[in-house]
Image 1 (cartoon, rainbow, N blue to C red):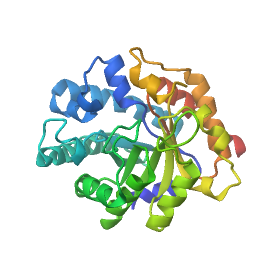
Image 2: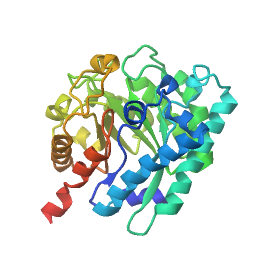
Image 3: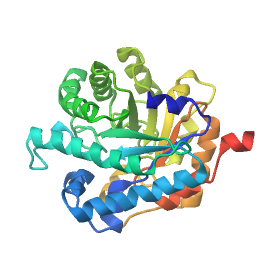
Length: 314
């Protein structure tokens, strides 16, 4: 299985940055419901997606790393069909088209030295910055299973559920992925105090999901938070931190409320973010993937790629 490549190297894979913020603030798109999947509907949108991903693939190639290539499906789940003006069938077809799009990019760029994994993105059913749509695990399973099964049929190597706000939704997502034996990553978003928007500590959320799913997630990721918001909480000697396998940090130190109301993109300091990400990779024993989230682009990932704890320790 391709997914095994994540465990055969002590050098983390790269992924991309903040796709939606880049397309809105740098390319001038209006993305309904913050959905990058709508870019697949036009030739120009596809061209801009191609250019975006190829820039990151080039960084991975030059740094000698593998790459996690995301299908732009974060806001293409069943819960978003109505807000996007689509039927459930249409939004599932969007998922299939998204996977076909990134799979074609992999076919063009993958080499033995540049392994590429196709990752289907799953987003929360509600607001990624608040718990306005808290779900039970049963409801989460029902809501997310159609998209997860569609991504599996389309041929993804794995899925990542990003910017989750509470543990119950994560449990339903893991259960849906386990139904079809699809590797699943759970990425929680954190507030400036290092807790989930639900108020739960990250350690407790990971423990709850693992207990309910027999440790069914491949690993956990932190995304959509600046390293300063959570770095102090991560004890490298604690057992729970060994379950953290990915980081996709924000460039900005702003809170989610501040980011939500911002009219100008805060892209932070790419060099600083690269150094902070590298420091976390050195502290955390099982980091497999590092990328960016809101406000990050090729500059930030270039700085992250420039740091290599594995090589410096060799």
